[in-house]
Every structure is written in C-alpha cells, then in structure tokens.
Image (cartoon, rainbow, N blue to C red; front, side, top):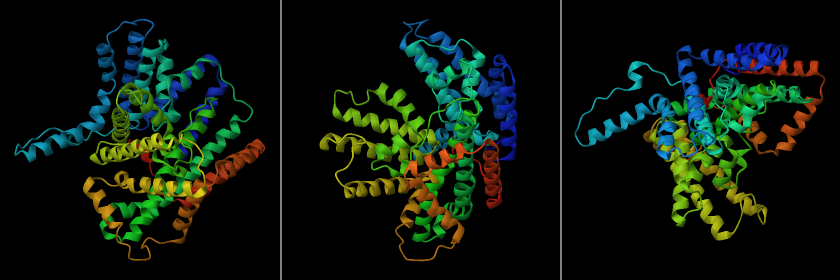
Length: 477
C-alpha cells in the first residue's frame, strides 16, 4: 500500500475516522490492528515475522530490564540482543555473505555451492531494517533505564505503527510509547499541519522524485556506458536530488499521517545538501538513523573519549561503515560507508587543529562557499555507489564522468530539466522562505478550503505523473 496511491488515502481516512469516533479505550486497538493490516497488505506471509520480532523484543525487555535483572551478565544480554538481528541477517545479508564466501573459495581454487535466498524466491520483507533497529534500541534502552513496557499490545502498536513502519523515521521508546499511553487530542493547528505535510510529501514524490526518475535517472543508470560525460553528470545531479525528495517525501507523509492521530514523530531531514562538511551532512540527512548509530554504536565503542586519538577516528569509520551496510548488502555500501567515515574523521581532525566548533559561523562567505562546494560534490559523486549495482558498474560510471565533450543530453526535455532546477532551488532556499511561510498560510485557511487545496494538489500530481507508481527508494533498505 504505497503512500501516494488512492488505496492509502482511503485507508488513512477510514482509520482516522474510526480512531476519533471510538472511545479512548479502543483507540490503541484500532492503531494496532490497522498497522497489522497495513503491513499485511504488502505480504501477509511476513506478518509472523513482524509480530515475532515485536513479541521477542517485548519479552526480552521484560526479562533483561535493569529494574528486574540489574546484575545480568553482559554476555547474556548481548546474546539476547543478537537474536533480534537474526531475521535481518538471514533475509537481507545472507546472499551477500554467501556470494563473498563463494568468491573467496574461487580465488583459492575451492568451488563452493551454497544455498541463497534468491534460489528459493524469498523476497526481502519490506521495512525489516527499520523495525529491527527500533526493536533493538528499545531493548538497549530498557537495559539502561529499566522502563520496560508492560503491555504487549501497546508495544506491538509502537513497533508496527503504520505511518513510520516501512521507512521510518526510526522512533525510540521515549518518543512514541508515552504518546500511546495517554489520551491524545488534536491541537488547534494539528489538522492543518498534517494535511500540509502530506500534501508536501505527495508533491515531492509524484512531481520531483518520480518525474525525475522516469525521465532522466532510470535509463541512464540502467546502462551508463552508453552515455557521455555530460549526460552522466546531469543524471547524477538528478539522482542526488531525487533520493532526497523521494525519502523526505515518505517522511513528510509519515509525519503528517501520524499527526492526524495527535502523534508527533521526529524530523528526519534538515536541508542536508546545504551542509559545509560531511559531518554536518550526517547531522541533517536521515537524522534518526544518524542518532541511532551514534547512541548505540559510536558511544558504546568509546566515541571520542578514548585513550589514543586514533581510536576516535576508528570509531567514526566503524560507525559510518555500519550506516553504509544498513543501506544494503553490497560492497558498494561498505565502500560508501568507508568514504563517508573517512571524510567525517577528517572533519574531526580539522576541528581539532582549527578549534572550530560544529555549527560555528564562518569568517566570510568565501570560506563557507568552497567548503560547501567540496562537501556537496563529495556527496554527489559518492551517490554513484547508491545508484549502481556493483563496484565495477560504479567504477565505470565514475570514469565516464571524465568525458567532458559537450553534447545535448539525449533525454533532454524542458519539463524534467525545469523540475530538476526547481528541485534544487527549493532545497537551497532557507526553510522559512518556503516551508514555514507556505505552511502558515495553508494552516490559516478555512478547513473546507484546505480540503480543496489538498484534493486539487493531489489530482494535479497524479495528472502530471501518469506512469505506474514507484515504490519509495528506502523500501529496499
């Protein structure tokens, strides 16, 4: 059930209607059942997996909470925590590990034939990375603070909450569970803000993301060797802004959908391509994932509080490699994480030698400009590893960028190029110039007018993008 389809619109309206028209004691049940139905609409065969992970995390939380077993050996808790990652390891990483082992065996002249998931037509369960990380963070938090959830149904509703189930934001225990425990009411501007976020998400997805994908990205990344350097650069810039609009569109619709129930989800993006360092980029891109790996991997490794300086840089690179592998079971993502980890480590080394603090203003615009351009193009070129299927394809694409002979791109058409330019213009304007002002105007409109604006915007989006709907890119992760 894709967010940008009529099916989801009908589903959301029905669930919201039942939720607010029911007595409070039934509302948690409505949220839980609707979330299970939502996930089952993708593939009912994987419902036991979602429910199994939820019940396992809840049960382990009850067993290993700090309040109940403060002296439980670390190895027992580590073993319990690792069980949550077994389904993720099997469904997402098994084939990659097998292919690597077979390749290594081939190098040493030892032919191996190991079973792979793809051989049995076992597909990757949608959203498995997101709900696994959410379950793991709950278990760690309970171990740290002892505040476990005693109601299994509430915990299932927390883990399976349908607006953020498939592609986040990754929600922590303290961010959502308290909201499910108390009666919630829609505040004065909640309805207007919810409709605005959903509409903005649809515009991002259907116009900016899907149109760019169909008209520029799809054919270029499918066979990059047949395109010239200028075409590859245009497609790469398009891919860079596409993946932002595609993912942030999901987040907008998720936050807006949750707000219709009076629930607030954390923000996930803050104009990331405006960053002037790679470290700042990761404070603005996929914020909930960055915070997750910081709190549950980087800090436990020691963070920057290490005996030797090199250990801090090691911790940064390990953390960023985990982020890379989280995105996909491929050596492309290992290299992606290593590159970004090295860049973030270099940013730390710079700060230590210059004394600049994160977020500190620059002395002049030129100091900001060259750092911004360098950071932006590092992020852009690294996106090749996202868009290609193998290291060989990524390397070929990278080499193709060096062909600077001018040609008019074969996929040139005024509409996609206008959308590409407008997409970057929207991203690089200050938030208060666009999002905040437009939102305040929208919220001030009478409710019937809001409904008309939402309906008209949605119909316009569907009219401009008549191709089959495209799943959000992060569904693969």
